[in-house]
Image (cartoon, rainbow, N blue to C red; front, side, top):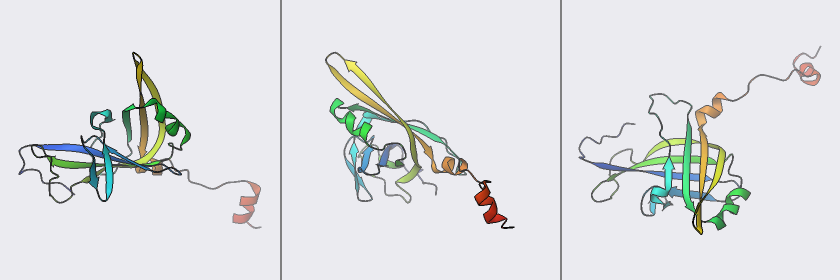
Length: 169
């Protein structure tokens, strides 16, 4: 569904990420400067500490890969990331449009809109030392649901037991 933004002189867009880590919890964060609630979920506003790679807009659903970078993570929280099952976690990114001068969510049909839905297939943890202080940057690489369907293996096994099941004689 297309959003009609023609009556606005300027809009502000922000991305809201929901990461469902199995056996841990649902993590919600955004590049908005304050905490914000969408559909009953409160998203932690981490502002410029969140970066999301560009995506392309297509008329059809296509396979796509996306990188999400989260910086400024305290070194004490790195063990949580390394010990939880980040790979295979579901990720959903929503884009919301706000009034640039007031910061209010625009009340137009289809806002906020889904931008990406997929699964984390890899992650990278990097340290940045700055004097005696340091921060950690986590980069998640996610593939879309369409890419997962394209990679599905089809066919059947040809071992003797399966062959006898298809050809009993």
